[in-house]
Length: 609
Image 1 (cartoon, rainbow, N blue to C red):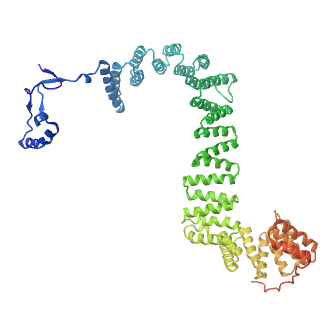
Image 2: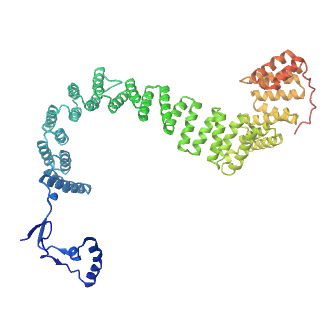
Image 3: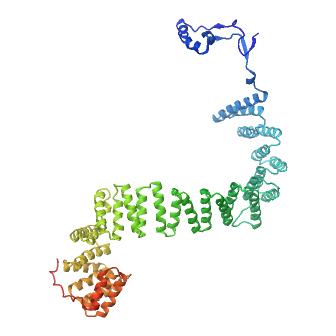
């Protein structure tokens, strides 16, 4: 019989040494003893001893009670069961879980899990028995009743007795636990699956009569009710009233709990009761103005209601608080884009891009929107900054040429054309088409470099001849011919050659007011004032919007024809349209006082081949 001692040996009588096989090892151990001895005051023997034939009972603080032993066994078996279940060893998992339940019978959720494992392996009766025992041992737990009723409905639902018993168990639970929403939820589910909607409505109506001050009870009951009654469009008014009354109960007992108010607001939103949802959300925002998520919900309600102005207003409040919210900037921009308010969309798209560091394609798309919206100053700044972000892309200097041209910043435009030429090269040759060279030529003409403009216009014409030999794009071809011809005529250079180009342009596009004006001006330069008058008056009828240049030309030709009154009439129109142009006002004054010179016809040049 083993001697019993508590806590350790009473003497060194039973102490012995363990031999480790060689003196070398023993000597090695001894080399370590000085440190051990110095630390604890014990010899090597104290560390190498074993107790033979003795049992030392643990201290009282380590002794488990019976309850703790059962818990310990339950935990060990639960861990074992989880391992078996993960490995697909269902039978062994069931055995482990059953051992848990023997030690911890109050684990009714585990009983449910184990019963279903048994049933899936064909042992339904054992599963049913397990849940019946669990209910007997946990009669005061609503979910033990739910588990048994659910099991009966699942595995004996086709048996009238099994289904009857399923209803009986849960209906008894309703009587026993009238303030537990989960009980109503399960019973309503059974009624609906059995096509007993009237009974489902009855049980909800009875539950709605409870004197319960817990808002969570009413919220859960409201969710259950919403499954029974259609609320909103197409719903019956009485049903909707009852469901709303349930949610009003939640609000009544919320006592300022914003989580409850928010969930009621969610219900109103989901059921199309937008004004009520707005009131709920707005009330919370008044107390918690930094709830950006709630402001987004409010914006969604306004959107569902169709009030886009309030959507934008609400979203703008969000970005005022959180200016780095790229998604909200995009939402605002999206609304403006849908309604054609491109100028209003642009700053929000800019903000979104600056936050997200978008792609070159996104920057390009925004730049084009700015150009199309005539936001030229904004486009210039945006594209100048963007060109630094994407220094190897020809897109951005190319796009810069458009707003710079519209702003008549011709020298800057020429520079961007040159950068585009350098960057495009073989990488983006599609940019360097005849339209590019035409605009490039026009920029040089407007900046006063007429020889370079002529060179580029001629290159444009060569490209048109090569790429469009059949004149499919007649209007563009006519525009190019007209521009070069007018440049020569206006500057008294190659007037006859210029006139031939303009005449060709007029043949290609006879309904163009700009070309008719150029042709009339060619006749004016040639001193054929009758033809000039007729062509210029025709130009006036062809233009869609009044044009100061055409009015000035008509005024000049009438003056040369001796009709000062008509000349003054048209010159006044030109001054009215563009009062900042002193050449119009000065000419008007000279016509009025008769100091404007009479012109002689220009000598005819040799007709160009």
